[in-house]
Length: 228
Image (cartoon, helix red, strand yellow):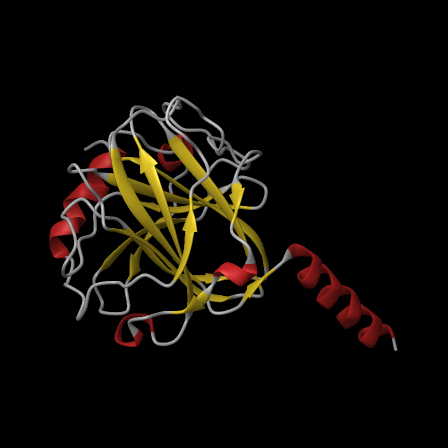
């Protein structure tokens, strides 16, 4: 069995959510059709801490802050988004897809190392081709979440041999976490300009949004306290 098939096989084991995911803080993707402006980690669109607001559906993720990015995919387009957190449990999902769009999510560490991915993981009220990635217990720092169509995938997902199935809050399938993916490989099988495909909403749910500057200052203050 090819590595990609293990992601599609386990989608049928997922348990539906109690409620559809709702929009929280809304952010619009800046890329336009015919361009590839955020196709790489280096050109990722940043999601500021102020974009995260209380989730409008507390029976899904409690009151965890969520930013909902509205974007489009088509062709071999890959959309990278960056965010920072002070650490804690995180979830990533797609909703409100159009034109039968099949989404794929990949989470990367700040150095570009793949942490996890998911192709299909349906939740109640969503499409069978929606994606859900998590639960992830992230340390403080910056991360990148990439979204592309289901026919595409991160090259590093086929590297290494250590992977664990992730579990959603409802005990359903939440994708895979990788323990030994190729360090720094954030490339995709294909990457091209955005065509007029379908729309999506990418929900980024983290308990403690932050900025790199704030996280760096907190680390500096902690170091000073330890020295004192």
